Length: 212
Image (cartoon, rainbow, N blue to C red; front, side):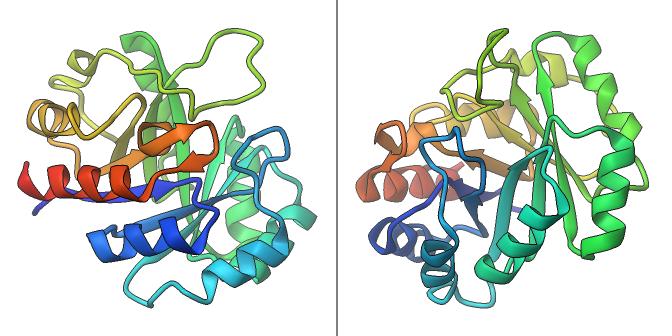
């Protein structure tokens, strides 16, 4: 199966359109106030109305409460919830209450970090391997950091998975060939500055994924 792509942290119709035209399988809307990519519910609703049914809408959260998830699901018409820094028991509760596909982000710096993924078997639908951010950072991802893809060599994934962290148009082909990632996820790699997506970079990235 060819690798597909999620463009995360979208906030304008122009860049959302670039993702859709370029063939993104998923688009990501961030609901985390400290992030420069955070969306208000009104803007999320406006953008969600522009997304065709064949493109998945993924809401990105950091250990959210139920009120936030409920409001974001309604506004963004979300198909899936991507959860960062969320314990397995909380993930299970969110899945049961909100009835959406669940992606769980696993922060990776060393091989042992990959073992965390097994704790989400049966309660998540997909694992997103992302680079671990520096201690004390307010953000769990979207900082342009990359982990060593060699860590994934011969790793037996407990769930379907996706690859994130430090990707861009120049590196994504190597990432796909080296890891066999079924989905690649990008945010900062298609930005001018944090939170400011570039439609041209989105198009270049998606073309590179298609060519890999």
